[in-house]
Length: 67
Image (cartoon, rainbow, N blue to C red; front, side, top):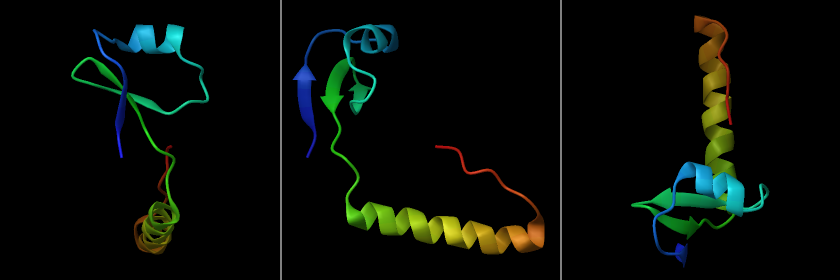
C-alpha cells in the first residue's frame, strides 16, 4: 500500500536534501510516496529471475545485475 507522505512539488534534488538516505521514497506526479519494503514474494521472484539469467548467461556470456 502506497502512502503519500508530503504533497506539494517534490523534485529529485529536494528528495535528496530532505529525506534520510536509508528510507524508501518515490516521486510520482511531484508527490512524495512512501514505498513499502519488499516482501518475501518479491524476494522469491527476484531470485527466480536472477537464476534464469545465470542459466541464460552460460549460453550467451556475462551479464550484470544492477540494483
